[in-house]
Length: 381
Image (cartoon, rainbow, N blue to C red; front, side, top):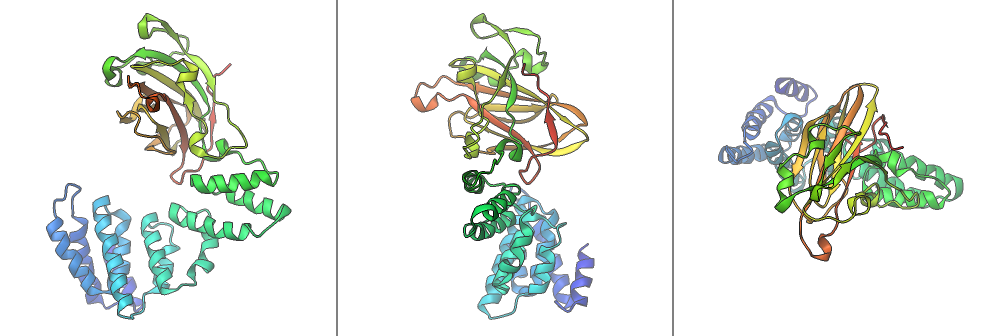
């Protein structure tokens, strides 16, 4: 791949072959850096060498980000920024045409494309006006956000049906919670009916089981029976030997509210009553027509684990340190047919008023944060 890049850039006259060969050798050293910091000394020397090459190193370095580890990507990103600053300070011309071609190639890593865009804007300040309208549905969250922000400025000047139509168009592609609130509120005032639940894949239909005992937090590592196998007709021995059965629960959603972190929360204090040193489970079933890569995103102020089709995807034992939209993200693959999502939430014994919440929010989406074509078939009658 790197030799193909060398040949291509040389053919279009962007850089001498010697510079590109040198750049690629240094990039190999940067990409060898390990997560634990191994190779940092060599990477530092390679970084200085890459920056010294100048503008000829920008495109090879961006290309290298496509398959770089997070640690290596940080080095590469820093190198691009340093080279760009150096070139601009020297009054040299940045490769605007090649940067735009890189940006428009959706096969590249979204963060690398975003970085290319930032460099391109320095080379061509008029680029945003020309390019942003085409990025409303972009795989890069930052590119999409900028495109929506630019479109919002224009939408604010519209009125009546024209405004309603434009806000509806933007709501269909929005992913960030603050922009969703702005667009959803404006659209609702214009007589539209923005559906946050459908747009973001928020799960509102559940079966709930609990409370189970968790003395001194032991329930987080332990396994109550629902965790081993879900049987909606089963009866379990719960906290203080009380009988526990699965009970259906549908989260009520106010269609006039658009604060995403407040929508779809399962509140165990309301469903099961208030308990301390306790474990509860939320269970839902979604059906997919085909195998589908997804992200399971959960917000929870308590200790939480979640499982897909019996496989643990995520675990975090942390209590009352805040909760936010998309707080925890796990990549997964839905199988064709029915899929079971189980969320385990543990409450501790803190007595402070701010430590009383016992709840979670979950959604199923694609890598951009948009809903995926699945059907919730959880029995709630």
